[in-house]
Length: 144
Image 1 (spheres, rainbow, N blue to C red):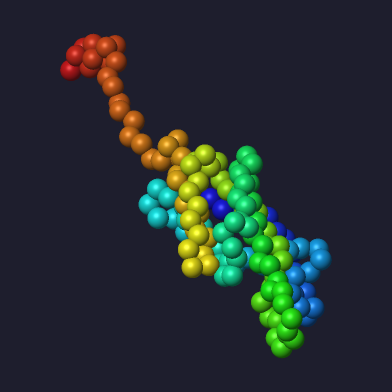
Image 2 (image 1 turned 90 degrees about the vertical axis):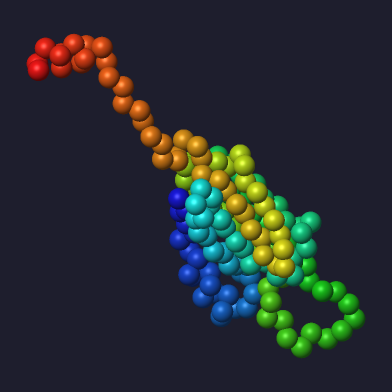
């Protein structure tokens, strides 16, 4: 259902550890968990300190893009430690065709963005009724 499309993710994490916060080639990381609850696919992103109005969620075909921004604190003070990344965060997920991307539900609470994507009706298991054709009924009467 979920396919990752970021082959350079480990390299970027290493670069962040060596060079500090975000790199110029890629926005800062956005940790995520994903799982299925019955007929719903759930995705959670950790975005502490992000204001809800900076969240931007787009769906184009089967690509879900989540963008957020954590702004730097401004003021007249001296920074003693700056370990939390600021700036733009972005993540793209390629979702399978078996999800209903027209009915994505998003909620942001306590620094966690939760997306709920229902499984498409066409992808749900269904029973197929077997009917008996009239020709089969005549044939079975003859063969007995």
